[in-house]
Length: 294
Image 1 (cartoon, rainbow, N blue to C red):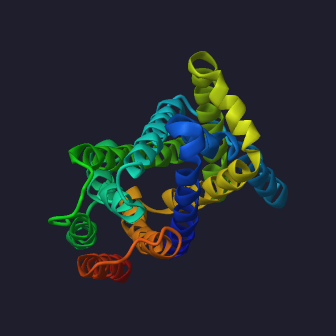
Image 2: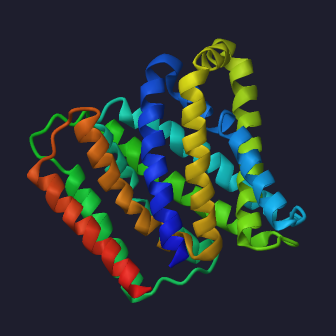
């Protein structure tokens, strides 16, 4: 059950990072706040990799030809997912946006089955459906000011992109050769992904809006912490992907909704409704069923 421990740590770190990025969106814009997670996360990813290599005396893994399509899929899908998530958060509450995104497990189970051949047992499918039903219940609020259909669409597509990203990264980790253990494979994949994302988004901003790059570096203090939390979350996501299917990891990751609920209530002063409480109960039941199945 080591993957479950990794997943819970990743979910907690990612919830904190999401909240930090949301605050940066007001000053840096959607693309700028998205870039912070990768640009300032990259140095920490390198430090993680150096720590692993020094402690294990392991050589760097050898990426195969198959590694590069997988890592590109993971990196590009994650960029798109993060940008869409932040755009949706501009129009919806923090917890409701996270709820829409967390319809991801249904999509990632399908992607994993089609692209990687990951098995979806009846018990896992049941756990996914129960937990996902919980986030849907939390999202449906009759009579509330929803901000329109567009934020909902953004949140759902963001969930799909996060799902594709998870599959891409798991495929990249599994394709590595010469890695001395799953920790090395996961950390190496993290660093390569962050390098690609930092280069791509930096080039985009230099061409389209160089002022945003300057603003990012002026806001280096909050950006540094956001980057660290992003790298920390990704490190533990990747460790989970190296051990078990992305569907297992991303279903257990629905505990992030509980963390988001706490942040929404105490940091953003957004109240919790009875419907949201019922949704949380379903999420907990689904996650408990998943863990029991293993």
